[in-house]
Length: 196
Image (cartoon, rainbow, N blue to C red; front, side, top):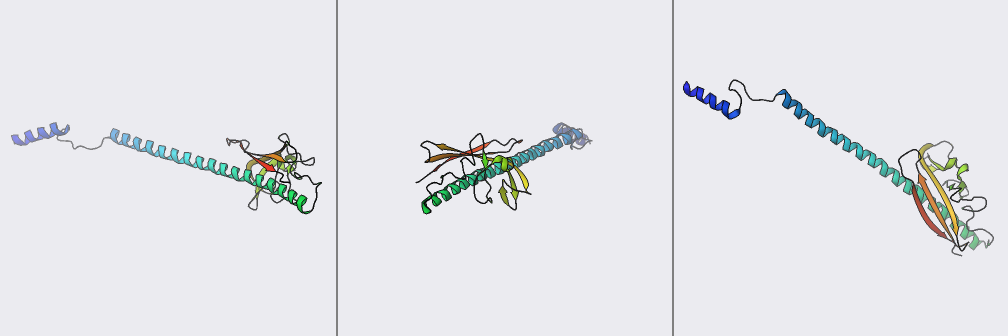
């Protein structure tokens, strides 16, 4: 019996607990464990939220890039149509920038223009005629002249500056913005040439 008591004492000394109690989790230990788990889960949700907002920013940047490219291609299309008319129809009086930047459509940095892909004939129009150059979605098309359409928040402005020597080269600048948001203004510049 003395030996049992001695073993009991050794058990107490070895575990740090009295022999009559069995070791287990206390309330404090459980609360600490739950707190650690909550911190980990909260951090994971925060990272997921950051990833979603980054995805949205990237999507907006890609859309802005395509909208700027579309405008540059539209300006080049109008210019090429003018050059084709000059070449094939021998219309030497036609301005190579007709419909892009001329007296009727002064698309300068102080008076930007817009471009609607479904507008006939293809030409640039002053932003005042194109709902302040706001981009809308209508039937799957991004448009600047849409009667009933969903707003995208994007604004596309085009300015054209003829460079010296006049009649040979022009600089086209397309600016994409999203007023009222943290989206940074996006500008693309390209040169167009009169090959004749």
